[in-house]
Length: 114
Length: 113
Image (cartoon, rainbow over all chains, first blue to last red; front, top):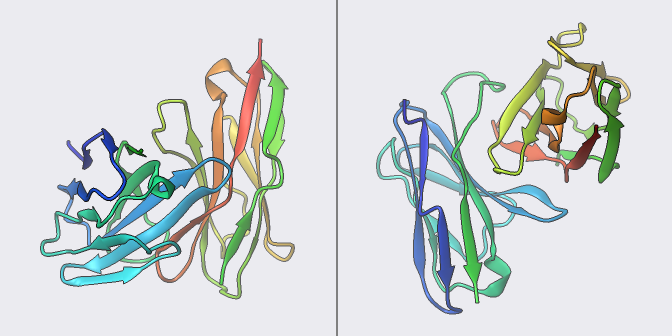
């Protein structure tokens, strides 16, 4: 039972580099989302998707791109990394249906931008 | 827009004692869910308890219970018989019609032996 799988778990980037955080779920969930966690800020929504081919911005989308070509995958792209993007990133998925369904989180990806 | 506020950045409790973590929220929606998540040092997000807004009865899960006051928009978490393993960051969260989960800033709970 893989659940939500995030890769890589740890990454160090130089300012200006680009990279992709991968997120995959094997539960056929329609809703997927990306959060970042910073000290004293809780988890903030970056982007989300309600199904394949549909994405939308969350609270802090600047500097990030997403796509949803399949139900299973929801990669997060950093176009030109900045030190302000140093954070812990969480991917989450939710089954389709009424709100309040159990939310499944990945284990997090630690990103440091130097 | 919905907001979630946790006004206690840190709390401390003696082992076997009871502690209450506070959470308030703001919304214009009538149907929504509220959650408490536990995040230990491993950073794993663990669902502690969930409350449906249209249910008047407070949710309970073993040693964890909530005091849900819908009119006051308050959703506190009570941990009874605190154990060392309860030490963690606790997040209050809101989910409405869009399924977007909105988090508070967290309360770091320390459990003293």
